Length: 373
Figure 1 (cartoon, rainbow, N blue to C red):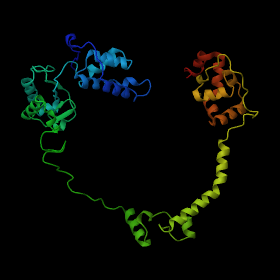
Figure 2: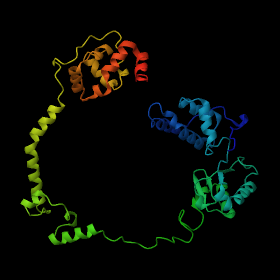
Figure 3: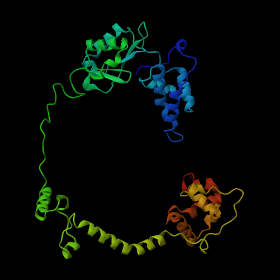
Figure 4: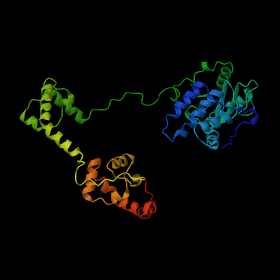
């Protein structure tokens, strides 16, 4: 892998700033990532800066690092790793990246490189005399079946010959690069084979399955749509042999609705009873205390998060010692109040609280082999 370094100091600008439009875009892009993950925006921000100024400067790297609260070296590592980032000034009208990996080399990329040396500059990453064109050799660009190929900015130009690339270079040099259509430069559709499709040229209709044949036969026999045929026979069919059809379906639906309404009251009552919280006056409710000056951090108990801790505080529970003294009836009451049946026993809150009350975090680590959360 080649070493990539920043441009010499004499060509580095003193500062960098996004344009007003790009600054608004950058802020919106950073907000796409969750809190603490904003550094994931480093590549899109560097790419936007390159599109704005033509290359990635030292000042740009430092500005992006400051925006994302990253060390300068971390952003420099990203910029020097990816060849998509240009670390020195490139052609203002076209920077041509010629793929030199094996498939392209076998298909003539060396001739394309020789053309770039002759028309632009003998050395890669140097501009021509007018500063409008530059070139470099890069690794695989992912269109091996269309070799050889080049990429100019964001567009790929494939299936090239030296005369075709020369024409493309001349159009970009004249400021008319938009006239050249990206993609294959020969008569083929994307990566389709030369001369058109040679396989799977006939439409093949798969034979119907035995089940489909039986369903269609049953549908014809009772004169109903095939989608209703072949269904399993139910107890209702034994007592009422009339099959449901689009004409009789509304009446059947109404009958089902009435049956559901008749069963609803008891089901609803059972659901309400199951979800009802225990009374605050229940004798099994754990005893509450006034909030101490420095309550224990109940979130250290595995299974207790900020929301549950807040609920426990509302119930007057602030210390490990309180939880450590709970009996089964009190645990059941809190379980019901939190709507987490079995949670306290499963996570063993009482044991955890007892250990924390007696020895704190150090004792917790000895007993459980890990830090409390």
